[in-house]
Amino acid sequence: MVYNKYSIRCHPLSRATTQGLIASAIAALALFAGVVPTLSPQSPILFGSAASAQAVSDEEVQRYARSLLAIEPIRQSAHAEIRRIMRVEEVPPIACHRPTNRLPRNIRQIAQNYCDQALEIVDRNDLTITRFNTITVNLQNDPNLAARVQAVIRQLQR
Image (tube, rainbow, N blue to C red):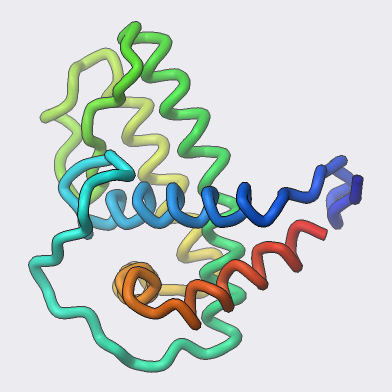
């Protein structure tokens, strides 16, 4: 067990858990920025715009990893609340680049709050949404980048 800088007790995650976190976070976070059409982690990522293969600096990897770690609990909480309200296992697609009025009324505010918080976190970590999306796309095709992000996440969780 470790304590983070805010004196919150944290249990370090296993390698498999960290990899799962990254995979689900990438799928979900790509969604909020409009990279994918659905929340399903099994859905292939399809892109309407070209992603830059520009190198990702160590500092950007740090910023990206901090963003993932901060957003993931918010995403999980929003999904749990939506599942509870709607009494379903599968959450409707939430794409933050789309108007929330396409969602059922009873979950719109939850989705909007999630999107607002996620965008704020990315901004607070000194990444633009465009750069965040580019890194997300590059992670899918660059095992070295994925390993770098995983290593930083493990380091941040200590």
